[in-house]
Amino acid sequence: MERKQGFFAALREEVARGLSPARARRKSDAAETAVALRFTGGVGGGGGGGGGGGGGEMLAPLMEGPDPESGDGERGGGVRARREGWGHWVRGQLSRSPSSVAVAAAGAGAARNDLRLLLGVMGAPLAPVHVCAAEPLPHLSVKDTPIETSSAQYILQQYLAASGGHKLLASVRNAYTMGKVRMVATEFEAAGCVVKNRSASRCAEPGRFVLWKMAPEMWYIELAVGGSKVHAGCNGQLVWRHTPWLGAHAAKGPVRPLRRALQGLDPLTTASMFAGARCIGERKVNGEDCFILKLCTDQETLKSRSEGLAEIIRHVMFGYFSQRTGLLVHMEDSHLTRIQSTTGGDAVYWETTINSFIEDYRPVEGIMIAHSGRSAVTLFRFGEVAMSHTKTRMEEAWNIEEVAFNVPGLSMDCFIPPTDIKSGSDGETMELSHGEKSKTGPPQGHRAKVAALEKAEEEKVAWSGTILQDRN
Image 1 (tube, rainbow, N blue to C red):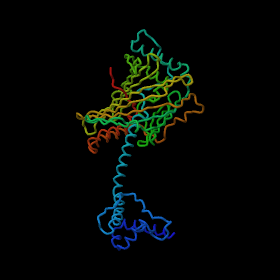
Image 2: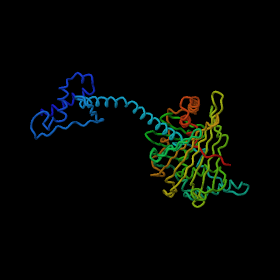
Image 3: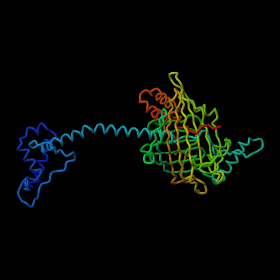
Image 4: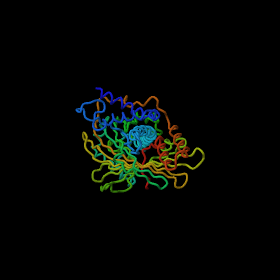
């Protein structure tokens, strides 16, 4: 017991002296020698604090720092180096910790910004036009009808038949879907410099979502990714969205369906949306021949979705329907917005493009539902001066785990919007304008990413869903 008490007393004294060199220098050489003997178990193999050969030698304690033995030849130099080396090592760790914390905080902030961008753009985009699935599709007619229109009507009739038949689809009063998603930002380009995320597969943010639908035009979705959650819904009269950084906001323009529901989850709404489309040709998608239907948003709808400094110029959607199965296997949409400068300068244009591949169709209660897919999103910003364009590319993969139709107990109360909802999109337009004015703040290499992030906060981009270029 005496040996143990002596050891810990010496250890405490040694650590105290190591952290306070001034105190250590006031001690005599004799005290230093005694401490050294206690740490090393004595000279010649003897016990350091008491007799008894059975106790063995006292081992020196392990130190979580560099070995301070300097061998400078000074009397007691090894002990002094050990003592002062320990103190210097501890002080060095303390002095380095703030920079480490700052680096970690910066990395966490960048990850939050990327997640905010992903959720803002890919979380809950909307379809380009108003859809009422309760209205019957146009009667298939060849007489006095352009061949592009009649071909599109025929393709949609085949699509409904392949999906389960119009009668069965119309009998669905409500639907429930649960699935998993993985989102990641894969590429960023500014002024001709391209930065690719080479560890995209490891950096992808996993998440889950739940989607409820109720006829005729009500829906609600919750999407949780990386600790953040996005809510969006429609009660048949108002479309709204809630994010942690913007709160609850209403979407401008007419009531529109959720784009995610069109990705092989709601065949009747999908067919109703393409009812006004034209067949513009054929193309192979993943080796499969497909018909292409093109849907353009009318000018009246575009005007109703525009407000203040933000003007919606174009929103076009393309649907690729397999000639073999009749099902929708690919969907593209492109959305172009012009943001006018508040200072009278040149306008800035934002084009958002989403390409979705829809896969793994399986029957659920007789209705063909796509159980997996992937989307690639591109944010393209241009205007102002030459070589000022930026481009950000993001990707998402999803899997459907559970689908159910006509769930008992689901009522209209499940689709009531938040009470603190803000109407219009003035707040988002002001945020985007502020982002344009603050471009001089960040370094040149980061301007586009910051602008793209603020763009994701802007309601019009996040709601538009987006599409591919109008290739007509």
